[in-house]
Amino acid sequence: MKRLFTGIQSSGTLHIGNYFGALKPFLELSEGYQSMLMIADYHALTSLRDPEAMRTNIINVTKDYLAVGVNPATTTIFKQSNVPEHTELAWIFNCLVTVPFLSQAHAYKDKVAKGLEANAGLFTYPMLMAADILLYDTDVVPVGADQRQHIEYAREAATKFNIAFGDTFKEPKELIMENIATVPGTDGKKMSKSYGNTVPLFGTKDEIAKAVMSIVTDSSGERPEHVHAIHKLFKSDEELAPIYEEHRGKYKNLKEALIEDIDAIIAPMRAVRDEITDADVRTVLEEGAVRARAQTSIKMTDVRSKIGVAI
Image (cartoon, rainbow, N blue to C red):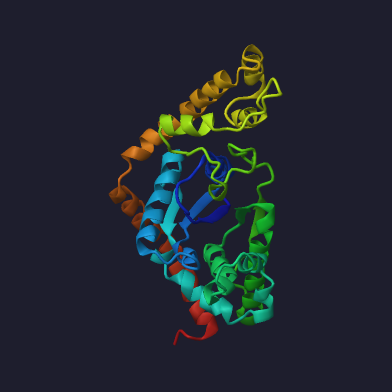
């Protein structure tokens, strides 16, 4: 089987947009590959300076993926900081690429333009990401179309090393996630925590109901478009058509139907998540790190020999 690698950061409570945009697609993809799922805690340091929040985020994002069905027996789930070869290889790559090359990174320029501190970690972020990917002889990395450059940078790092020290790294390919649904929020804009328009993924039924009932509706129409746009994620058009016909103009009834359909999907996952303990997460991450290091230690032994530091 080909190897798939993805890294994730957690930035707080997830919403249904995260589920349809990231968790569900990974779950579906991972079954066809030898899959690696990395909790990118060192990447998070470029903007997060709160140790308690870091610890909480690591635990929560791992629980989230386990709750939606990612199986740690078949997917290697590990924490970046538990595999020191990542930062070691990133330093080697930093010594091979130029400052002008790194300065062209779209993510760096975008974040600085938005006012994020231009720290050195943010600047060299692409080389740590390249190390993440290349350590595992990764075949494919699932990304959105706007993240294609990350994989291009990884290929460039692989090429520079291979030319300088001999064939060592496989050049990965991007797997563009073109059919990922853009989930509308309660105001019709893209669902985002920054907009305050989310429906919580693992919220209680009452929390889901509160969010759904706040969905902005157009009183001049017979079908509330924002409600319908979210509803389509949970039922097919064929299933929804008779419901919306029967309750034409009855927005409250349609919102209540949406609440039931969301909770029918979320409730089982929420129950699973509630049973996952912090100790369970630590066990999964520790076992994943052992499996990851079984690969990275071999790769870095080869790298150290080729660059001449192994004597």
